[in-house]
Amino acid sequence: MGSRRSRIGGFRSRAGKSAARVVFALIIALFVIFRSRSRNHAQGSRDDSRVVANEPRDTGKYVAKGDEGLGAAVAIMIDNSGSMREKAGNDKRPKYQVARAALEEMLASTDSFAAKQPGFPIKVGLYYFSSGVHTLSSMQAYNAASVRTALDSMPDPNGGTAIGEAMDVARKSLYESGMIRKYILVVTDGENTDGRPPREVAQQIATRSEGAVRQYFVAFDVDAKNFAFLRDVHGEVLSAANGVSLRASLDTIYRGKILAEAVDAGESLTPPTKKP
Image: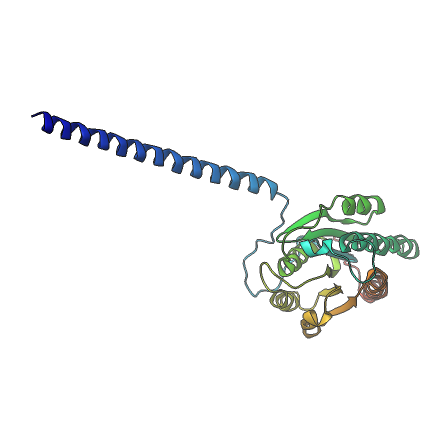
């Protein structure tokens, strides 16, 4: 009888230990789930500034949001991926600092343009992209102080390179600008690593805008042949091996092409008539 009781007691002891292990495992599992959800929530909060075009991928023509008038809108997409921490050529500063200074200098030429072309509006939107796309300054009338503040607010480079997604966000902002002339300017130092391929997006933009959106790239410290597909959509890519050539390429595109083309187009278009 004593032996039997001993066996029963041992069984109960083992059963109790097993139950304790099960309860402990459940507690650990619940802790892991709760912690994972907390992290996801926190990550979602950090990504609130991410911009997503978020439109059905059909093949119809893009439709502007509201009426459009004479003027030009430029969506500038700045690569802020991890590789922008590196240096290009003989530059003493990392690429992201060189690019921001060059862009500020490029946009400053808008002031002299506006002085020569009073009444011709220029709107500029600034965005940066890494693994996602984020707004620095939404599409608005050019203002030197706002541009400087926006560029200074850009975080340190990190993450991948979502070029295609950046192009789509740029296109969306252009169709909300109210301007007839629309331009995308991408400054990047690498190949696409996240989201849709830029070749695919470029073709879609060209087709659905019926050529209304002009696409320009500056390949900064990366082979421009990676973006040769732009020729198929009447776009253009210029190379830049360092800060000096980056400023030259940006000036060629912005002043020599975008602003010049915008004015030429404006002179050849008839302003929309106002309804009585």
